[in-house]
Length: 339
Length: 291
Image (cartoon, rainbow over all chains, first blue to last red; front, side):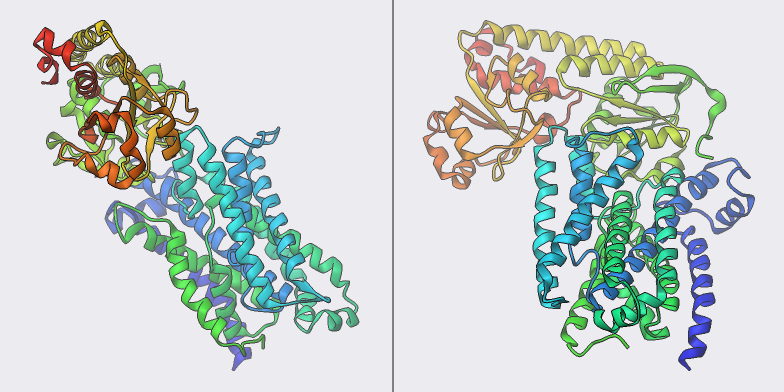
């Protein structure tokens, strides 16, 4: 049974993502007629003149695609971190990496860090470094005698998350520019509002790269779930693998936070759901987590932008409302393990 | 694909107050305002009948029936759907990224920046020029200018310059620092602001700072029906303040004080009369400018 669903899961998820992207175009703050939307979609980006085409191609589609990229990427980061600590409670938001990335990015955004030569890259790189410092600190604290205690890990995550959030707040409050303060406040809670085509490239490339690397690492990741010693005896250089995973998680989280702010719990809900369908093998879990995370985020964004129309609220509110109860149930089910 | 829209009609290039070069259509029939003070600016410039959309914070009766657009985050779809020739944004309220985004969508987006009353008067004329209602706009600006000059010179003739604290919040001591139009208002009203040297444009003050500065007068944007005893209930230590002991706490309509538009002239008059009641009583016409 599991074999059949496993084989069908990937094409099904891909279809669901394509359908979701198209369906989400029909939702937005303005009510447009379905036929107009369909005409604009079919005519292509420069096919028809007029407001509908502009709304569909310049506002809704880049926004939907950014949501899909960020959702998919965060879900994949969740998979990698859970393999790293061999526990399904790990998530970039819960462990404070997102807050670390946000602190790094706000240091740049508020002008505390120089823009540098590659100004488009400075903010994502600042976010990456913030995330990397956090993930390393969390692990240094949580690690005892070669193994990672999940209680210590979560507590270290909470503490680091609070520290990073206060750094971001400090930066915000000390800024003389109220314009930027308001921008940061919204961004800190996560939003895809105002996404543009040219802003998609960097997060898309990062997510694609990360997902491919993790897919290629499927076998070592599977081995890691058996325990570090077991993985070592299977001929895997565990220390190198772990360093690579640290860097990859921080890189993806940092670049995604720089693009859309801190959005939590996707990396928690999605991998769990995926594993319950196709098992724990990473060759299936990684690509499926990306597609499912993308679908989840597209609909979370539809909710956040159309529930209180025309006012929209941060998409992080939706993912937290879905994710926190889920997290608590996982925490309560103490016997929960992989497999 | 971002750069389309109704490109055929535009041919005037102007530089807005954020220093951005923008192309503005020569005929402006449809305007969206993204801040209440800019809606009031449009009314003063004689362009109220061109407004097709305002921000969700707008409450003027003249614009009740228009589309109300969310300004944070900006509802770009809602704006596009109104097909405007010009969108008005305000530095410090709207984000400059939003103006760039509108430009990329093919919509002229003009950013205003009012850090003094003179800016507001110039803005009225500038909007009138862009829209083609110069005559109304210039008349209105001249009337307001006369009122400003009258209040400023009367206040300047008063013998002393009381120290003033302008507050937005009565629980959190939210106030304006240097670079805010509030500093211009207090200066013209014949006072000296105790927050003029605070580098942040918006800052939450500590009780200690207020106590150490001990202002002669406190002006709060707490509304006209505000019970001034509330401030000392929230901050018992303030009972020591000179302003409290002499009963010189005044609360004004927040919409008058917090919108850097034409109503700043009203705000100026209200503050000046409070700071120098005897000077305005001698002239006997202190309320003329209040309209």
